[in-house]
Amino acid sequence: MQLRRFDVASSSLNDINAAMDEAGYVILDNAISQEEVRALQEEIEPYFEKRPVCQAHFFGFNTTRIEALFAKSRTAQKMAVHPAVLDVTNHVLGANCDSFQINLTQGIRIHPGEKAQIIHPDSALFPISHKPFEFQVNTIWAYSSFRKENGATMIVPGSHRWPEGRAPREDEITYAEMDPGSVLIYAASLLHGGGANVTNQARTGIVISYCLGWLRQSENQYLSYPPEIARTFDVQLQRLIGYNVHRPNLGWVHGHDPIDLLVQKDNSHIGAEEFLTDEQIKLLIAFRGGEQVALTSHNLQEPVRELID
Image 1 (cartoon, helix red, strand yellow):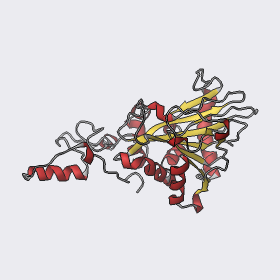
Image 2 (cartoon, helix red, strand yellow):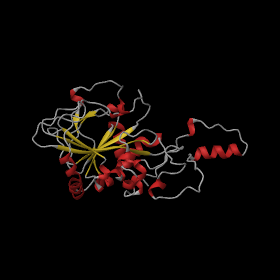
Image 3 (cartoon, one colour):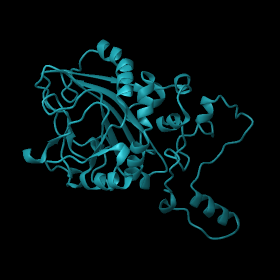
């Protein structure tokens, strides 16, 4: 089965997004340089070496996982705001949120002898059956070589459109083989799983996932990156991890934008602000002008691209 893969430098975003719609995943080759791969490895490797393997039926018994990667790696911070990744994420999620956010970060090292993970959708994280649209987009960056034999991620192309509960046949499963610096992007509803490692070399990937801005994040970003740490991040990443207000009025602190905490702005002399969509503001202005208007859930979502632009 031929994988849907694109070289970042020579491929159009329209083609990439069209493939994402059809297959539920894309692979972007050469998304970061080999120099950046080496920097990532230098930053992250000490944490892998100190962390014991998991002892869990889903996470594995011979797999190492590390979290809160933005506090460990400047390179991971840059990967999180990769323009092509954000464009694909916005293409999938943007119509159903005012802004999307980081859901979690995780380094995953599958050691020799680890068994294959159960095939699953990550959308099960959010307990709503028959979701009307995608809630989450995931990325897995190749930190080391991904091959079928060493545990490359198993994916089931097109399964993001399947009815819930359908199990894949063996011939419907393929493997996201990648070289270091490439990234697999997939819809959370796509069936996938970590492969078995039958080699004598570990397979390591970096997961950065994104979800709708009005959902609870899997990894608690505010404890992972409290203000004293988040202040060291670029503003775009600060917004992505959740120091942001999702219109209308989700996530403010003391009536104000939480980004103000990071710049230590004193708002004690300013009354509470409101964070509404343009459509809501127009309706409220009309109401104050004496018009009969109705504010309903149908005018709540007005996608923005501020995280990309």
